[in-house]
Image (cartoon, rainbow, N blue to C red; front, top):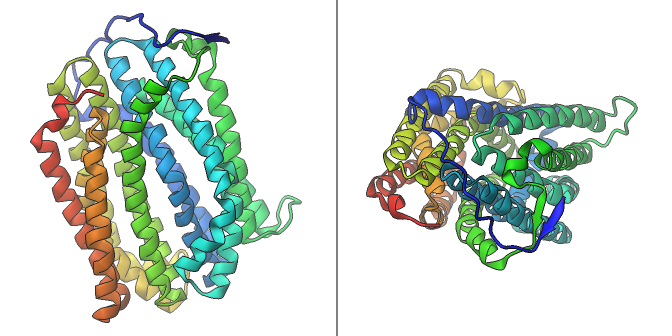
Length: 460
């Protein structure tokens, strides 16, 4: 490895050939399925983790559910910086400038390490978050312990996500898939050992779940870094280390920060949503965690297709083929809509058996059934939102999504949740009704933005 004093690489390779089936559903699927498999393994990890913790009790499952959502509040603002890198890599790849792909990835890695350190610095403030959330004393005690251990993989996690954005940006979605599945298997093994005290490991219960996940995250960061530095990626100047360049990091910030803000506002609203439900009772909180965990199956599939759309839109914009970028977005929507609506139908037909897989408490099953019925209703609109946000991201149109998340989630969704659940006395049912209205409105707004065509003229 060498340290370069120069700024951006200027060598331009030939523009990658456009495949005859470019923009088709098949091309989207070929890029998306490894991302989906990686996302599904992540979701399966969450399901298995929820199941293992669920056997400990209702307070334990509520603590891990709330703690996991709060963890994303720390990760998401800086995770957007890693996700924004995908836009730069994809457009540079589409334009035939491979060395620029590696150069911008190094700029992203500098930001990843710095943001990971920031995550570590907020660990002492975890108890304050739980005080604001206001769960029961037992959920608070367990949740604080869980979250403080869970966040220790911050720097490694950010490095992993940045390197993953590089691989996906150049169209290699199989490498992140293989790493993700491997790490998730290791995570399950560690959690099984540390939660119950198997394999000669100490029985740490909720704390063990957090430590196992953190250790697996650290391993993942190391693997990604080793693979990014491999000699096979020499055409991308991956082993030529440039110095940090403020102007290019500002470019990353302009695209990535709104992504992080949008995800923060969206997930943050559901953290508060969970906190509101937690005030209704432990059974409602546990049911909410189970319903969201099941709902994440369809969401992760849609997110994977949306990430593929982001890469394809970016690559075709870089190649100056706007019509193929648009066609790819529409193909991605067809694919996501079909899969997510089918899963929603399963929620509609089999809510009680699905919820009872995690917890047999009659109250948990009753409330979880309500949540899944609402989730079934908004699957089509969720598909609209996740695909078009991904497509807009590939063009660098990220600020609008952040504004839409703020208005939709914080001006409409959360006040409506409190109104329905408490003021109108609709309890759990009313809270999930408000979530359904929010997701439907967001999906419609995303359709409007994409069809406006502003993204076609953007320069990052």
